[in-house]
Image (tube, rainbow, N blue to C red; front, side, top):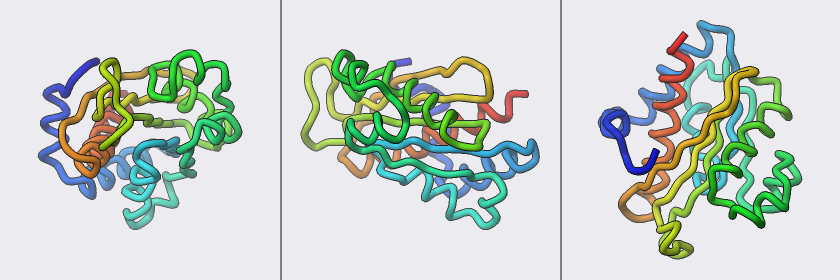
Length: 174
């Protein structure tokens, strides 16, 4: 997926606290635990989740893997994959989500890797490009790309809202 969708617009209208609370209610009701693997958001998704009272019932852990080395050391993303595709890629987002599931006692994972800016972008991957990985149990990990508009703060907050909204949709779909 490239560019914001209708669900992104809906997510933007719902605040992060509400999304995290709703996500927590669904995860807890289903007996599921969440793990996060974050790069450009630097732990903001985990922070949004753990700001919810009772989140210890459904939030297992969060990894902040900002450097390429951390992605490899903590999540098992192959260095060759990062070198071949770049840290901001479908392959790395999927590898981060798979690694998070493998290294945690959780059934649901989200990963995020992107270019929040103001620098670091390119023609192929402009500032605002964010790849997400989503994992659930033994199902194949999925990935999607969204290009957010705005400054660093807006890109990061948009990525957090998008991740929470997509997680809520994924765990509510049963």
